Length: 127
Image 1 (cartoon, one colour):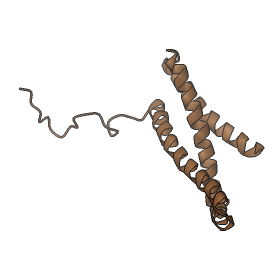
Image 2 (image 1 turned 90 degrees about the horizontal axis):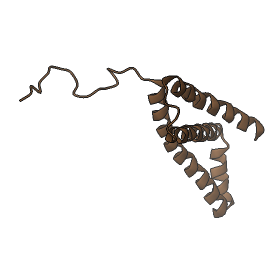
Image 3 (image 1 turned 60 degrees about the vertical axis):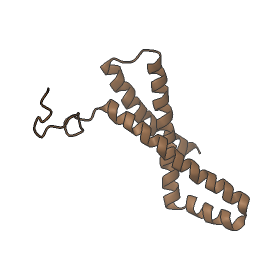
Image 4 (image 1 turned 180 degrees about the vertical axis):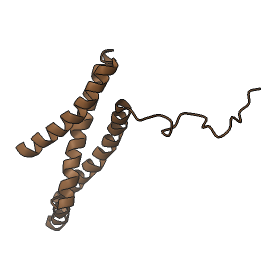
């Protein structure tokens, strides 16, 4: 039988062993932005429900969403929406079986990051 006690080495790879790569970080960020979009969606839903509930409820919700904190959350939600959309398009491209060379994977990763920032700034300036 194999010796399972190999000292203090971990049984599986951990972040302490492997250096984070752009592709893994963008994958993790895609999951984080997906969850962040749920929070932004709940805030917008609260705002709509408060508008239907009456002027006092709407004043409270509108006060929160138009405060500096609400503005920050909404801009970050907008960035998360653009990031998640571009990352989804990248995955659709990968679903065709193309774009798996290391050079192109890196370019697409930086494209998703840079594109999401540029599109967020353009959206904030236009709207």
